[in-house]
Length: 180
Image (cartoon, rainbow, N blue to C red):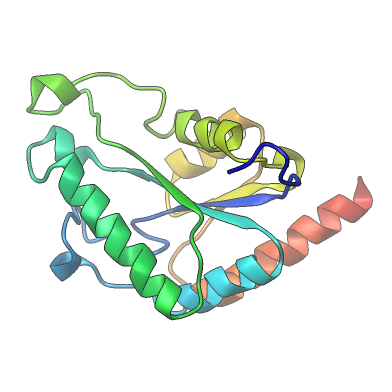
C-alpha cells in the first residue's frame, strides 16, 4: 500500500459468523461453510469504494487445534475463492492468542483479540483508511465492542441474508454521513 493512496472507508468483517458459518475452530477449508450471499455482499462493498478487511479471533491456534500457518493457508484460499467471484478482500488480520490457551506461547492477553481494537487499528495504520466512514460487521458482542473501542460503528449480524444486511448498513452509513 502506498502512502499517497487516497483515504477510503473500510468495512472490517468478522470471519466466523459473517464470512462463513461459525462452526467453531474452523482451521481448514474442509470445515468452512460459506455464508450465503457473502460474495455479493463483498462485491457491494467493493463497488461502494470500501476497503474490505477480515478481522478474526482464532483461539484454535492457542488451543493447539491448528497452526498459524494453517490459518494463513485457509485465508489465502478464502481470498482466492472470493476473488474468483469478483469479491475482493484487501487484507486479513487474525489473533491467535487466548488467555486459556493450552500452548504457552499463545496463552496471553492481547490487544488484538476482540473485543480489543488492535486488529482494526493495525489495519487503519497499514492502509489509508478513513475511520470516520468505516464500520465493523460481526456476529458477537465482542465484535461490536471492538468497533466501539476503535471509535467506529459496529453492526451485529445475526444470520439473516448478509447481502441485504450489508445493503442496510451502507444505507445507514450514508445517512450518518449526510447528517454530520
